[in-house]
Image (cartoon, rainbow, N blue to C red; front, side, top):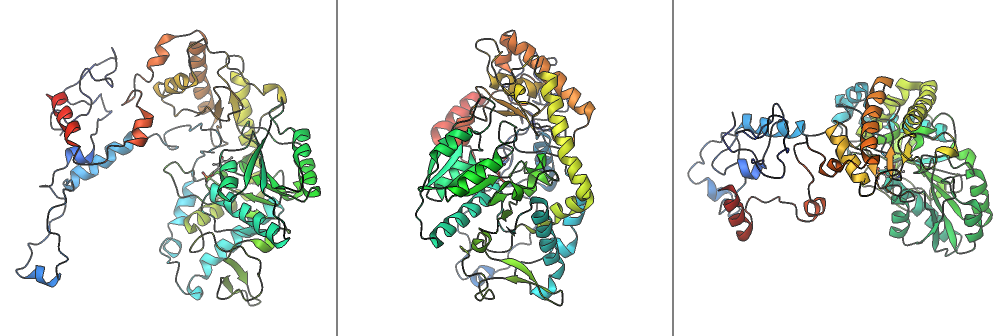
Length: 531
Ligand SMILES: *Cc1c(COP(=O)(O)O)cnc(C)c1O
């Protein structure tokens, strides 16, 4: 099946597992773990998976000079080779369908197959955003129904459905705040961002043109209320607070923070990406929040493991709703739904700051999220939050005897458990522990985030893991922690059993090898290496 030396892993290269059972093979495969080289290395310009008829004489003339003059060197494979190439690559991926995906903050939970079935219904999947409104009443019904659920669950006044990710939603909320301040004729330049906020929060505020100022966390891992209130003043446009925060803790002073910010003339943005920990139990509207994005692709399943698609609707308070973006759905007396856009808005929404996206948002994510909401129901959602918190506390309390848990004394955590490298022997790092988890067959947890904790390890199990799955993960992380605490030097070599060892992540990002032809020097070096 494989040509000899098809593998990128040659005996003696750093990827070869030192002394691992089986050692090097001729094929480069290790058991059923198949090696795969770049398509540029295995494909040739002479091979193709399609069988096109020979050009008719004179056909080139009809192209009017647009035909290609020289081959462009794209690699070709036959159809079965193409299928195998991508199938092999997919088997090197770790995915939520393979096992627990314990990334903190990202909420990698199970994707119910019902969501996928609904999103693939032709009436939703085959829509075009420019179709006449009377042919898409069902789709508008989905957007409108989902909007109603989000408003109800959050206790807010309005919702902007079009932002396409959490960070995009943050921008939407901050642009609402900016528009509201402009309408008041005020030029407030500062957004306060606590240390326990997600990294996208200060990035968003800076991107929108505000000056960002940090607010320290207190010893319990929460916002230092006194430091925050002391900094409020006529130059402060607002605060951006992640709640539950990135230490996995609920900001208990949220209402007091909102009241103080409002009294000082500012607005309260809440990063609601962690809404899964409180859905059905806390309504952000009751806490005085003015704008909050919800990551449909976290809280309501469908995690973004492949880089998308996401969806980040923003719920808005009564004070900020007039500034929200177009378009939005509107129901008429006869039940008919329309989209209110620039052409049709008239003078009904005169203060809108504009638009977040060309069309109406991520339809596929809307259908998935609504399927999730309706299949769980209000009581099921309440239980989602309870189970997510229960699972995280189970992880926290099962490991706090071997891993430093800096805020374990602050009470129960919310949806994620935070550990530090404090008990590791000198020289052993969080990175070593994460790489050792790969040998155990797990995707590592979030590393070195949040920044308030040294060598942080943030674990979010989510509610969709069983106790058996959690016990397996805990046993592996416990074993890794014991090795780290005792200074096991072999940890620096991990992973030993993965298709690749430690790659140069900076070079992989900055100088990716994506080209078929290598620069002359490198090609010669590669030839020498192969020989
Ligand atoms: C994921 C996340 C974001 C950003 O959401 P994206 O959809 O990735 O843009 C912001 N804040 C928190 C707390 C998050 O977990």
